[in-house]
Length: 402
Image (cartoon, rainbow, N blue to C red; front, side, top):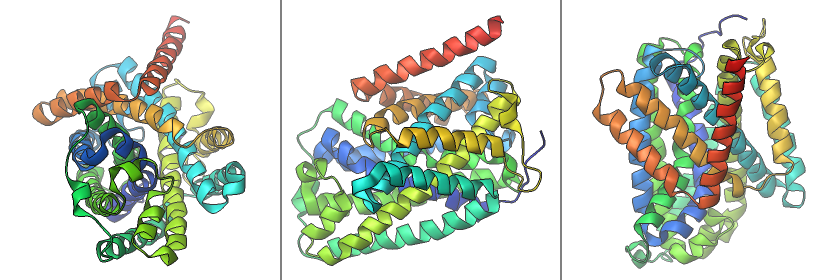
């Protein structure tokens, strides 16, 4: 066991967080969120962004205080006690492992729909190999992916907005419930969770006390601007009802705008975005696994750091194997609610931890927001999420009784 190398600057950290957020949200979460909130989708987006901002600031304060790999697993352990740190780590690993499978399958369905699961497994293997070779290579590849995705999204917004085929009436509020708005916000939160990747890389960031509090809000703010622009364009083009049933909402939006020639570009952009998200997700899950293994909550071999590449290579390979197996059998949309529930629990613990730093208002709002959005999710997601948390608690109890 040894320490990781501090190689990432502010720009690298921002791009890693932005890459995971943009890749997850735009191409996956808009459709189920529209199904829940209807024309109130933009309100749900704003609500999810507000909760994410509180979480981001709590995470930034904690990461500056505890610049170690592991994120809220470390913060909960240090501020609230060993069990809460463990529960945060458990929630993050299981929730983000599900997210990894969803992103891998997104790649498969866009690149090779007839053999989506095989393509998903191939994507997991390829990106696990990239991460294995070192953090700098991961940051460089993420930078390239983010540039491509942002260019594609900008093209979609410009083409749809200037097409003359949009209807501003689609943006008028009506026809939803408070529960629907909250449920959509919980589903859209799935898209904002990428900034956690910055905190989980705390041991690999240069000058973490300065870099992390700057990088997290910047990444979140950029993602929110992108999300809002794309959501407005797609909602204006399709309307809430059509958006709620769209298999590929951005592709359908450009078709509705009379620019079907752009559709292949959008599909390639979706695949690239999902690859960027998957790259960062595998990176973050492996670092939390490393931190939990260091404290013997997971097998100690997962804490070994490669002497040449400076990465937790055993953890990365283990995460890659699990994600590859899930990608071979999972459903893209079925894991979003479960992942959102687990990650909201993770951030609830982060806010509770930050509250002990005597920064009361923002962590209190973030904690309440996380709990409300978690219980507002679809019943199946809540039930499965609670069951997995109880399983994790049982594992912890058995280990302590030995």
